[in-house]
Amino acid sequence: KYKALLDAGVLTEEEFSAKKRQLLGI
Image 1: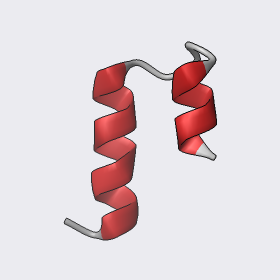
Image 2 (image 1 turned 120 degrees about the horizontal axis):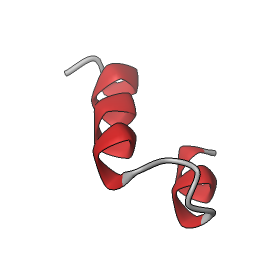
Image 3 (image 1 turned 90 degrees about the horizontal axis):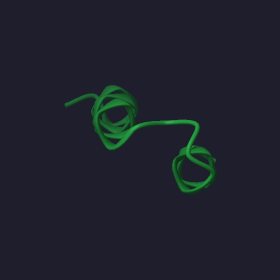
Image 4 (image 1 turned 30 degrees about the vertical axis):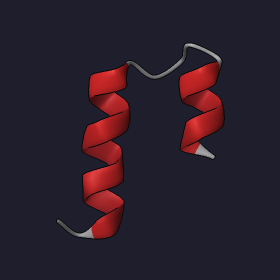
């Protein structure tokens, strides 16, 4: 889901990474 937003340019690379860490609980 977030990958799609990233590809669409909605999320920046930084935001994507932060969200991914959040989801993974890292």
